[in-house]
Length: 224
Image (cartoon, rainbow, N blue to C red):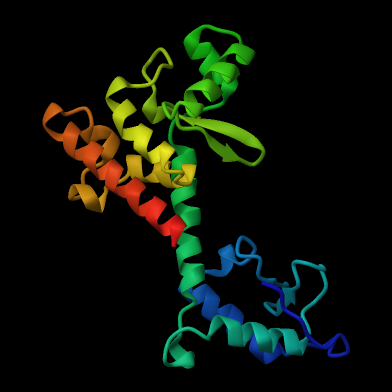
């Protein structure tokens, strides 16, 4: 989000800035401002809040602070008690991704070691398998991650996950969404974890059906 203001108003509005900071801290949202492309702030040694425009690196002006205040309080019928839903959702996304990254995950080198092949061979095979919708690859900070839950001890795809991954990957879902859905309790499965439930012959067909439904929803949403 771009926040503009009067450059001549260099002093800003410390009252608005402090109130905004305290409010965001109370909601636990201060640490996701940068991820949302919003201005960020720091408290100096005296506890005074200093807001900065992330685009320019310059202190926010009073007009910019007041505009930011309006933007963050615009949702809901009562602006005084509004909650910035987009930031709440982003906070959840950041936490989910942090949890996923803390789980077993490989790069090409790790995959190559498991498979007993060269790194180049592992990279080539991984992308070929991904193109065939048989392997989930997740881009992250300029690298490609291979979530470990989908692999056997030898680094090959768990066969019971093949019919689950296929519709999800073919449906064009965000790789992070696929990773999260497969490894966390899913509402479509009554709280079961899909990648675990898929190992149970009595549940496998249900997991596959849920994956197809999720993919269909994604396709329908993309076509709206």
